[in-house]
Amino acid sequence: MRQFVYISTAAHDVSNDDVAKILESSQRNNPDRGITGFLIFNGRNFLQLVEGSEEALLSLMNQLARDSRHSGIVRLEDIPIGTRTCEDWAMTRLRLIDPVNERRADLDAVLPVSLAPSVRRTILNFAALN
Image (cartoon, rainbow, N blue to C red; front, side, top):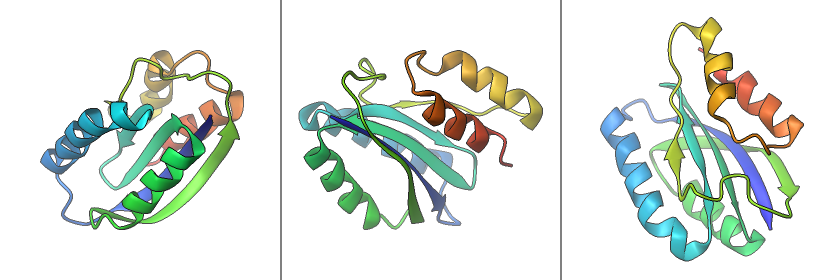
């Protein structure tokens, strides 16, 4: 089993409704694929953590590469995992609040405690972006 974390740039016309549709589709499709994880959207960029079999994740990444709602996908983390950190999340949205200086603490409070330190650091650094 593997865990990927990637970022991408949202298309200029992506709305909160679009993000809601992404989540609905993920929550509907991910259980059959054996994928769990979460999505963060800061208004300009996406950060997503997904975990599952390497085959399922590579298939998902190929699908995401064709999605016009974002571009410039960069995989930041690709690590083998023995157990899931987001076992109960087919896909959940973690929201970033304003002001920016409070985001890291608020996000850190809801992240799974079993995240690898490097993954946690990557996600918390994303939260500082504005």
